[in-house]
Image (cartoon, rainbow, N blue to C red; front, side, top):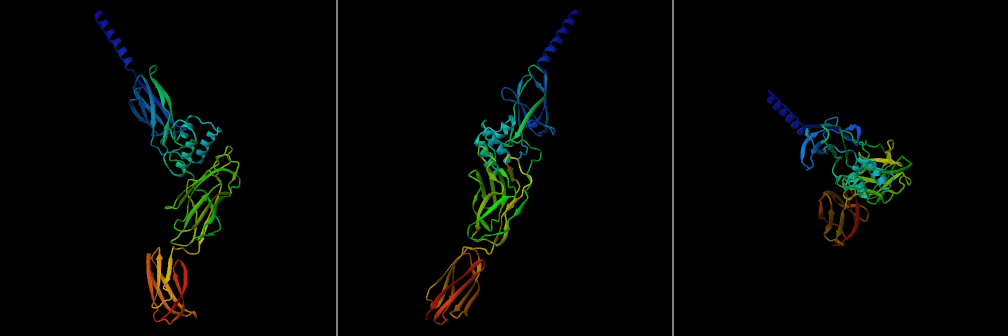
Length: 412
């Protein structure tokens, strides 16, 4: 009996020792955006990584940002996170916060720093600022650091069995302001009013884009469409050298952006005059009449403290044209004429011409109506052998081209 008691006691001791050696642990926590408990991040992938960089387990955060790992052996671990969520809205305010940080006017917390470090080199400088302002907001290029950044969390399970309320915080790269919400944050189309129509022809004309906000501003960006089939933009100028623009001549979209990059931003420029656009009617334009510049989503104007203005209207150009302009060439020969008057015509489009011959008394002595003109260069011959000798005038009328006139003499 005593022998059996010793054996049972030994077995129990071995069981307790073994159970201690293979004790399993639990890790649970929440993923939040910029450490904001009211803005949890769902569908974030969290990896449990050991000291040898081996991934031991993977899980996803739920709709409340909560996650859990169970049955984890004792040890030291890192929690690494990633996401394929829609990115936050990156706008002019984020760029201005980076600028203020560079000037020493604003100090970043950990998550603002992660968001601002868009090139992922561990520092914040003008390289990050220009990547946000030009490469991302204006040109739509991805950030070198990727879409999302998360803090890595160290977990020590060598002295305790459960880790509760482990906080993981993330940020959408570039969203320094930290206002990401599920479904993305968008800026409404801003209200606008049009100017009195400006006549545009083949001569360069300057148009003004402004607003009804006549106080100091620190920045603006606008995305506009214009009638690309009617006018071409030859130049765009803003308040100073910090003004940038991008022009897509295929889609007719003009993007402009400006931030006051001086040491004391918001003390120089007023919102009445934002920028100027030089335009002229394009050669070979397909139509004439009236048209306007229109605003697209994504624009804003900042007051002198870099706050977005909500109640502001923009004055946008209205243009009008009297007729289309075709790059058309016409010459006549020979002079004097004997049997044929020849017209050499170069046209950018298929068209037609009405050709009239007048004597010196102004009477029509010959006409060729609705003569076909084809795209390219061609020759049209007018038979003049039956005209008496003398002086004559011709008039060539072509749709969308000014009437062309000339004179010639006829000999036998």
